[in-house]
Image (cartoon, rainbow, N blue to C red; front, side):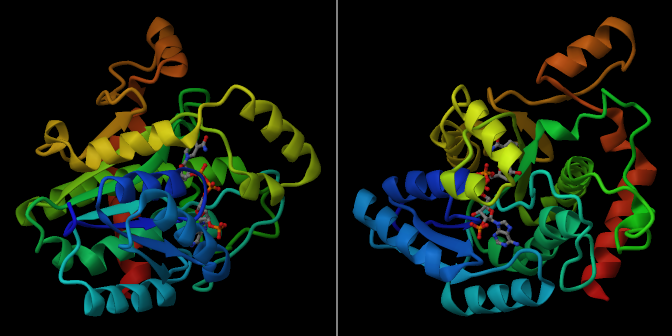
Length: 312
Ligand SMILES: NC(=O)c1ccc[n+]([C@@H]2O[C@H](COP(=O)([O-])OP(=O)(O)OC[C@H]3O[C@@H](n4cnc5c(N)ncnc54)[C@H](OP(=O)(O)O)[C@@H]3O)[C@@H](O)[C@H]2O)c1
């Protein structure tokens, strides 16, 4: 696998770091795309040391910033002959945050990092991916996309550029879940768009994984305690990293595209019904996603916004 190239965003901690270790230990050339080079350099050295693979590179990338994405993609294309695997792992979720925050391009920060940034990056790297024999893209999604608890929940399309940041109550978890819902809708649409170039595009529905020390350190006190408590039972990131690896390299997923896959490596299905007993299964199971994700209006809306914001 010496010549296969994988880019992993947010590769310096948690699942991204575990995935970098996995790919490096399997002999891939890993490009860690991280925003804090000082911290990430130590992680890069650790991965090279533990896997005995010298082909672990580190490049600067802030997924919340379109300028940074453009710089990264130009530098990557100049340095590497093609891209085989692109893993959109980095995400924004600042537990307990009360304040509505904007990205450098004045886009709500969760949407900028978790949806529009990955969209721009994919589009800029698509021609380089198309040079691979078996190009694959993976989006890190979450069970928080589930709208089953609140069927009326919808993306606040009218407040993604700070329009109501002073007057509307900000809920960081709703914004996070909605941004990942947007990512899932983009996943479906990008899979269609990139089909003719042979690029496979899928999303992984991550349920729960131990949070890294670094991530917990950034939280406010009450959230720190909760995170430590949850970590007692949550599985290690290495299991989810194995899922990243399997979806991006195995023959089983070679022809699969435009799907959401759960932590048990099953294809998640569109909910057949969101009523009665079905709804209980939707809420407690990991086998279905909400109808909202395939609503034509929502998809066109998020697709149109992605194009307008990234091309504008
Ligand atoms: N852990 C779970 O239980 C869980 C559940 C559902 C979904 N997920 C998803 O799984 C993925 C990995 O999560 P994790 O638990 O491993 O999280 P984590 O340990 O907090 O790692 C997140 C990574 O993303 C990076 N990142 C954040 N914003 C960035 C930006 N603007 N530019 C570049 N990198 C950025 C962070 O870098 P810094 O170190 O510089 O902050 C960090 O390396 C995320 O997409 C998350 O939404 C996780």
